[in-house]
Length: 359
Image (cartoon, rainbow, N blue to C red; front, top):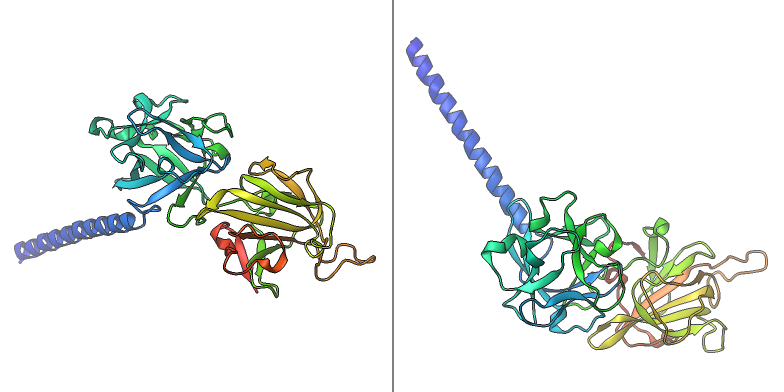
């Protein structure tokens, strides 16, 4: 009897061990499947890679081995388009970054170096240097990405891709440096199939109010616009590099409803058409002139209540109606109701992390 009990106990123990092994394997398999399916970037899709600070785009200067990788103003050409090809999900997602102007090449950490300032170039795929040709995309809280070469993960802090300088000039090198969560080390990944998707622009105010709820309304007119309920006199900043199209510091009959305004064409176009933004009802505009090129975060004016606002300001209530109206359209239109739902863009497309309230 005692011997039988021991045999049963052994059998039970073996069964329990087998169950545990099976469970562990199942959990590992399931987690691996979930991990693989939840990749933040779709494999083998093509993207533009824009620097958050400069607003300029990762560009390969050439189509041959050892061509340099730098930043340049948006053109949409194939040397600014990259296929992100998934490599593996062992501990992290790694991708080859393949330039579309020569898909036989991949982005490469020059000389397999992990030294600060090492350049990014393009080279033939080489299994012996795979860690210098594979990159991890880690999403930050603000929706931007840091891009870490696999070769650099052993250093502390990890080196990540950045615009050297940081410079806003065309041709500034893309290099690696210790990641410090600074703006020139942050990147926006934009699909090439939707030219204004996930632009991840900053809202046109200081960081302290960047996550305020934004009213989105048609307001009696047939187009999308944003109404920012922000204090009178708050500074307004341009959310992306742009060229000034028009400035209205004096209210005319034509612009009376708009009040004081700034209108810009962003560097990024859409199907060959400019993306035009209007900032209306300002208290004052910055000292800008038509044709001026302005960078991300450039100051353009102050929030006010000029033009047609509801309720209108009165002598006893001079701040009535204070808000910033902003809209973005694809036809270059700048006056009033010429805008319509066919050429204005739903705001969540270019401010994907903002909080919107529709009415």
